[in-house]
Amino acid sequence: MKVLAMALTLLMGLSGSAWSGTSAEEEAERVGEFHVTLKNAAYTKVSVNGEDWGETEFERNGKVAHVKGLKLDETDQFEIVFTPVEDGLDPVTITVKPTEFKKRTIRRVRYHIAKKTISFPKKSVDKPAEPEKPKPAPTGPADDDFDL
Image 1 (tube, helix red, strand yellow):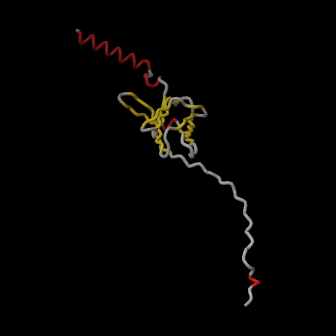
Image 2 (cartoon, one colour; image 1 turned 90 degrees about the horizontal axis):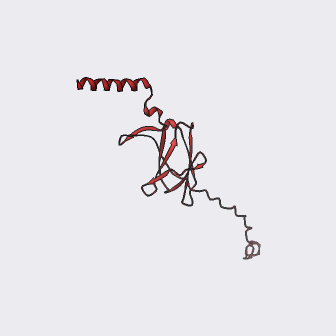
Image 3 (cartoon, helix red, strand yellow; image 1 turned 180 degrees about the horizontal axis):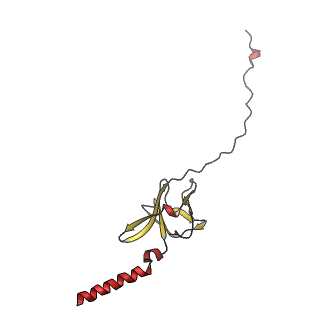
């Protein structure tokens, strides 16, 4: 009798979830993480779509940045600007589309993760053009003055 009651309870539970038509995963908002390996800099300032981004974590002495909290359902693409803290390097802008985020399961938790590696170009230091200096006049005797 207990087996029959348990079977009916299980059947009712399964049929109830089948009637709802949506799972909890589909109802939840899709939030992504962008993992960036920084080649020639450490600890950057991050801005996403023109706003300073506070949800950034760094690993490996600042060489890996995890940009978290990107809401994948709200925009068509993310424009992420990495500005290095070190002098002499230009910022890098990366455009990431929500389709680039792949589902990863880590310890039974599902994440949407995109990965890239970037390197920062050196700042172009434009030296001011030096004005051409006039050649100094020869100090020795002229060629015409020699007697042969």
